[in-house]
Figure 1: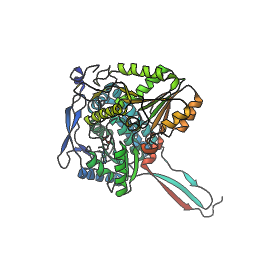
Figure 2: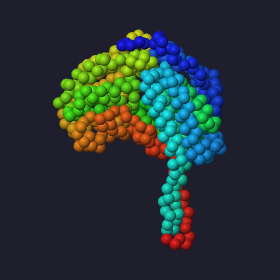
Figure 3: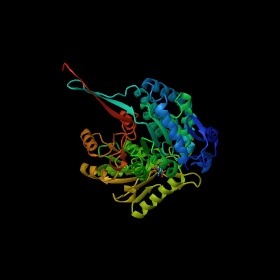
Length: 499
Ligand code: ADP
């Protein structure tokens, strides 16, 4: 490790765990079975805390509470302005507790503390404020105001929503799901990932403090096949919103189909291309490519895991990438010098290392990295492969780790074809000063977000989601509100219309 790992002064920042139970109907409660599970610190592999383990029967109770809050509670009935005000208060409370929340994500998910504190959690707060501001701007439209009929649409909250979220961005994905559904007046049951329940439970506590009524936001930690499946197959949940892997996305869609045909939105994986053209500034392009694959240790659904470089500057870019990757600092997420913390859990560590072995066996050239760092904690070296063929596993599969597949191209047509040669379609990046190239490529790539001369630039107002097997529906932006709304047409005849 380039910097300190674990047992140093950073431990002083580790908060005591205050919330480790299920949050149902406004109270922290034990699971019915009394079962608990461990959440592990990826820096040390030690147990941080034991968390109540929700299962089907707990989800049932949480759904009942959410149903009651929807059918007869104040939340869907109050004005959008009133909901927005409470959401603003919620945002303020997060701000007041930001250091503790950032520390929770650092010990639970291996996130860089500083990034969590100055970027991710402030980003989550922005998401909450964005939708708080949208809460009183949700309305239908007049369809016919003349002729024989007066007709209009009403936008109604869809009902009880189930949110199932992953472990790579516990704070921002929590609010990406919760904020728009709160804004429209839905009630909900959220299952955080079993790897990262800590900040979600803290947010539940703050929601109550902010004045979100009991039963509106229930948080039930537990495992996928039990608590998660109970959400996707529940007969009384109206919509499920999921972020995670394609495999689990499929299961959720099947469970929804087999139960009550609840609405399904899926934000799944990616194998996103970053295309660097000959006119690019080599240094800046290398920085973007590394940011795209190493930010959050590559545990990012829109990571730039395939980097295509035009032949004229290929050698220079390759050299720069290796130089910079070797200097990249992997270490304790509390150390301000660290640029990359540990992978979120042991499964991830092993999965990534096995993909790296695959890459070597398939004949790609390992330019740098490729090994686990140290023997304690789930740290992996920034890894770059060159001579990657498009059909190699490291070029087709989402690795979800700090592993870049570097490839060379000649023409713009070839770049577009290769970039689209994937079952995914979440994001893409283009580095060029030529607007014609940028415009042509943006329109030709089948992906939900295109970054020109930037990467990972996300905003609460940018719709985010996938083409192809990267998903269904859009999170973020006003677009996301529609996942949680039903549209009702209301038609009435006009007798003796003067028009
Ligand atoms: P993994 O952790 O293997 O990468 P995902 O990232 O897809 O899997 O998991 C994201 C979320 O989906 C987690 O909250 C997890 O508990 C949940 N999950 C896993 N399996 C299922 C399932 N069969 N049904 C519903 N949710 C599930």
